[in-house]
Length: 58
Image (cartoon, rainbow, N blue to C red; front, side, top):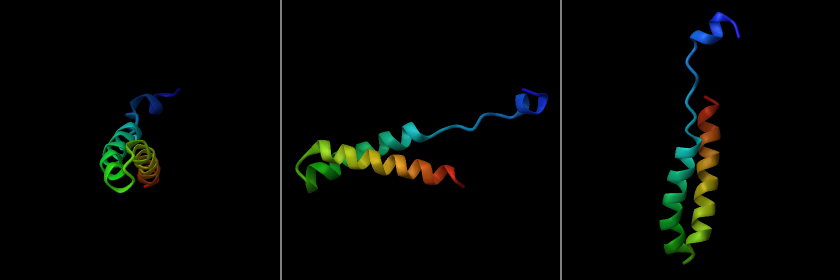
């Protein structure tokens, strides 16, 4: 590492936050639409992962 790399602050990753928020919304979505919380969590976590990837490309 050179001096320029040491002075730069590392970028924060929000992937865990996006997964948690997506899964939380997915619980509600899955309960009312599919009557199955597990499916909602999977779909919500998938949307959270996708959102965090798209948000990172800016």
